[in-house]
Length: 420
Image 1 (cartoon, rainbow, N blue to C red):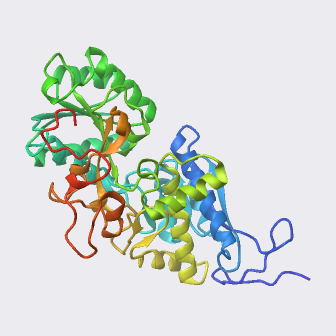
Image 2 (tube, rainbow, N blue to C red):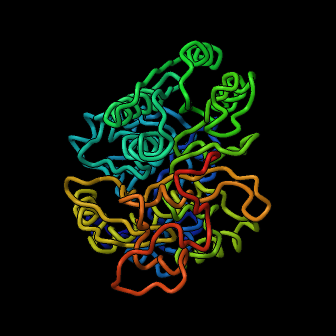
Image 3 (cartoon, rainbow, N blue to C red):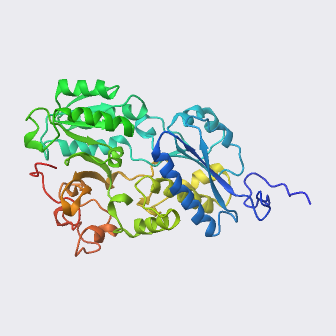
């Protein structure tokens, strides 16, 4: 018997899968960059989420399959009219999105960019959502830390790898630093070129952004003259503090005192303290027999966000899925709550960002929350009320947010801390 013909937006598709055992899977293409380990990690999280959704009844009676596409700059046009595609995840940079600008305007397709910063570059599209926190949000936290209220620096440097990410980082730090009364010097180029500029200008802190290889090489060159040993020793030779955006948190610094931006619920740094993160970590380890290291939860959250939108839409029609995405209000999937709207296509939340510092103390070795950076007023935590108990003892629901220095984890020192 010939299969029944169904409309593109029908919730019932009688197509069978290749094995002939049931309905065809709803596809979520995942564009990866083979040279970027972050995309491979995010893919594992996405596949875990697809498996969970499928076991939970699937979408519209169909399983979900994350399909890896190994093409760093492929156009998305081929997916716009595919009736089996719910949305596309992009972990290969924004080139594929830019190549498809006209097609996306003609035929809306939900797209979630996992790592690039379309928001700050002014390249956001009507159908595109961004999972990563914009550089401007992270730069605000960094500049507040560098400025008069904390480190009391006068000059900061930005060493960036050429490209979209480096451009966004440089522009964001220049704006945020200037607003704090800081002189900002910047350089874009090879690790050798940016290092030469920093050593000639001698900023008290160097913010490095780019690929993992670029950051590793540039920071090693900057520290050739001697590693940072604390704020009071910056002028003992040239020993700038090293800082960065969330990409910095993938590294293991050679010395303490480095800082990197991020949200407080990063799975690799909060352990099992937050219930939603604990559940994700447990499911991830059960499937892969290893712990996640940070980027996995981004793909995991993106797939669950898409699944919830499709369920709410009730049909696999791209425009209706986008409409549902824009109604999200504090939905939580293994990480922090996601809220979206017609003018807010960023899955990350600005107010939960702060800084992590690298510590070599035996009791808290590694990247640790710099608790005074996770505040709105340099006094009380900006952690969500539902997560207070994860960081503080004796919290009262509905009461005032706890003071950062009462935290039972992380670095709780004040701005007098010479090292961090």
